[in-house]
Structures are given as C-alpha cells and as structure tokens.
Amino acid sequence: MKITTRNGCDFRSVSGDFSTTTLVELTPDSRLARIPSNVVFLVDASSSMGGNKWSMVKQAIGEIVDSLKDDDRVSLVLFHSSASEVFPLASLAQNREAMKEKIKNLNAPSGVTNLEQGLKVAYATFDARANVDKVKRVNHVILLTDGFPTDDQGYRVEQTAKYESIVQKQEHITLTGVGIGSADDYDSNFINKLSELGRGSYYHANDIARFREGLQAEIQKLESSVVGDLTLHFTNVNSRVMRIAKVAPEIVIYDLPGNSRSFEIKAGSLTKDLSAFLVQVNSSATGATGEELTLFTVHANYDGKESDRVEVKIKPSDRDTDLNTFDPEVMRASQVLQVHLNGEQIHLSLSSGDKAKATRLIENTTKIASNLGQDKVTRALTRLADDVRKGKSVTDDLATIKDESKKTKLLIK
Image (cartoon, rainbow, N blue to C red; front, side, top):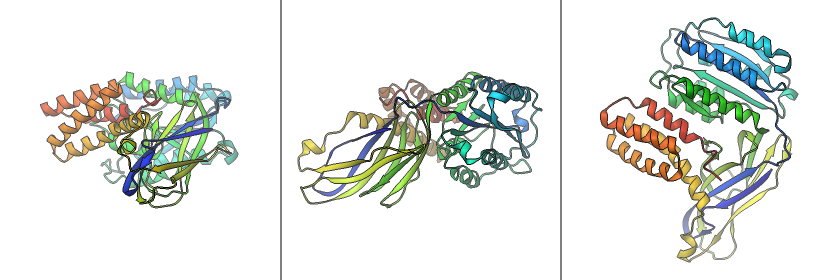
C-alpha cells in the first residue's frame, strides 16, 4: 500500500491561527489479488414492497447471486413485522442454485417495517461464521427498503439513534443503503446517514433502471476489491482535526476525533482504484520562522499488513506569494466534498422555510458541480431550482443529489 500526501498550501503564517487541508491518497499494490466477499442482503419485506417492487427485487438479487464468484458467500435476511434469515452466509460454489430457487419462491411481502430486528439478524449472520472466515474478505450488508422504519403498530419511528448505533458499532462490516421508489415514501436522509456510518454507498432507486444501476455498481466494487479491512492510523497530531472525509472513489464523512493526539479511522474495504481522504485541520503558529511543523503522521493497516508511515509537515513563511498558493488537486477534491456537503445545507434550508438561502446555495452549488463536470448532479440541481420556484415536492431531487454527489470515482485523479 502506497500513501502519498499533499497539502492545499505547504506554508503557514509565522504567527496566528491557520487552517490546512491535506489530501491523503492510498494506492494498493498492483500485485494484490481480488479478495472474496461475504455479502448479506437485508431486504424490506413489509407490505409496501408488494407487486412490481417485489418482483424487481427478487429478480435483481437473483441476478447478483448469478454474477458473483464461486468463492463469495451470500446470505438473505428479510425484515417485516419480525426478521428472518432465508439462508445463512454460505459459499456460492455449493449453494448457488439452491439460493436462486429460494429467492424465486419468496412469499409475498406483509406486515410493518421492523428495521431494528432486521439489522440485528443481518449482523448476527456474520457472527455465525468463525473469525478466521471473515479475515481477508469484504464483509458487506446491502440494505434495500422503500419505507420508513416503524413500530409494531406500523407508526413511523422518528428517533433513529438506535438504528444508527447498531450500524456504527460494526467496525469491520460495511453497509450500503438503497432507497427504492419515491423519496416521499422513505427517509433519504436517514438511509444516507446509515450508509455514512456503515462506510458504504447510498443509492436513490426511484425507477427500475436506477435500481439496477445501483446494484451493478455494488457488484463492480465487490469484484474489484483487493483489501477487505483498512484502518487509517493518525499519530503525532499537533493540530485540531475539523473534518475528515473519504473523497474517492465515493464520499464518506467520519466522526471527528476531538483533540486527541492519535486516532484511527475504520475505512472498510478498498478496490484496486486509488482511494483518497481529505483531512482539514486548524492550528496556531508560534511566531517562529525556523523548522517545519508536523501536522500529523499517517499509516495504514490492512489485512494484517502495514504501510510506511508518512509525516505531513507545513513550513512557516511571511511572504504573501507563499501563503496564497493552493494545490489544484486539493482544491478539486475540496470542491467535490463541498458539493456533497451543500446538498445537506440545501435540505436544511428548505426544511426551515428559508427559500432564499436555499436558492443561493443551489445556484452556487450548480456552478461548482458544472465546473467539476458532475453532469448528473448539475441536472438534479437544475430540476431542484425549478421545482423550488414552482412550489413542487423536492424530495426526489434532494435524494438524487445525495446519491450522485457521493460518487466521485472519475473526479479525483
């Protein structure tokens, strides 16, 4: 694993506070082979999933089971008023046809949406395997749902902390959320949040084509995975970390470590493509013009291996020409992240009734996305602006922006 770093600016003032953005890029060794996957499909089987949705889900999961490799393992868990394991995490080499037959003959959906029990059963499926079986594998949950989590009476559960806690505790298992149908029917913010905590993707599948596109993208990631469990270690931290986010091949926002001098980030699996992280820090200059200041040191542990340690430093300078330089690659990565973050600010502004602020944010974000070449995000933002003006529902627009702005594989070079 090769780690390279670059600062937005390699200089800081000789006195006063300063901020630095560092791009940390990870390139897996080209000799690393593809590793197999443990995949659990966690599927909403409540009554709202009936009809065409259920046929679509069964067909899509069947196709994925068909396309995965023999050394991959798959499980299927359904949740409705309760939760049940249709078949345990088992090898496709011996069980592929039996799995496809069970998927084909699934009963029609019924009942309410007990997501809490579904999550618990899904993660317990991994626990049933010996620890040795989970090493050097991608351990991944794909959540498919078309609705809000509900209680036993079918009423929507507004407080989502218990679901988020379940996902967040699973440091070695990633989760991708797929919202099926209109975002009026499911909480895109909630599903996106679960995906953030699960260090996975989020897809807004409001039609069959987007549903298939999302699942195909997941399979492509599984097929190209070369690292099953990556942890980034930050030590010798001499500044306050203000934000840390994965920005390629997709965006994931991590919890802040506070003022700790050392911390770690569980990043999940990596594909053979470059992965990149942005680390934004604040610090204070001492007034000295001498030696460089170390911001932090970073290294990676992955599948029992360890990368070299890279020390990130910054130099003091009193020249404006030094202090006003900025690395174009770090700038681009920062803009990619900003588009994603702006989506949440637009949502909050509209939710609070501040249409003027939302409109300004939409205009600004559209310009950034257009300059970045994020065509799908730009189109979604244009539709959003039009729907805001007309007073129409914007939930699908916002969900699409969350989905598309999260995908950055082709934007960070």
